[in-house]
Length: 173
Image 1: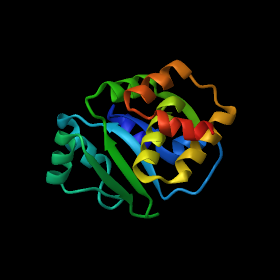
Image 2: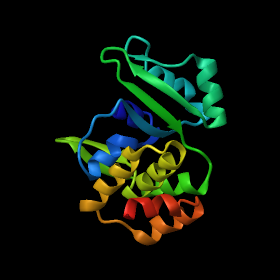
Image 3: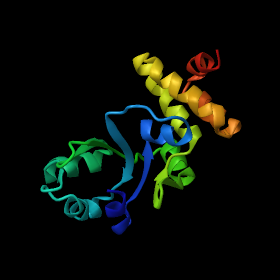
């Protein structure tokens, strides 16, 4: 999938549990989360990258509406049933910062892909914890903090911006 996106110069980066696992330990996850920047002129190219015999992709009208509204949609790999959540890059300072700070990482031997910075993953997981109350997000963050160098100034900037101080305090307990 990553190679397909890169072949059309569609910018992306991995987030969510798979990204957190890069910085910490492996755990079970149900899906793959990607932030993708699809411009309206790239919709047709995107559809061609993921033909129905390989992936379920929403119909053109739905895809167009999601791209224009910077929403979310899913791809499903037909052979494996793996669901890929496509989160469209929003026009916000945080998303712009995330895109600028992504890094190319070797996820498997010989396989490289763009991945969100650990700080950006932490901010999103703090927000998911605030929304859901699920302790798994705090555990993911704690695991990341064990062996990952963190830019505390950057992290504190976004924790303050999004009002996540109480959630961050729970991580540090």
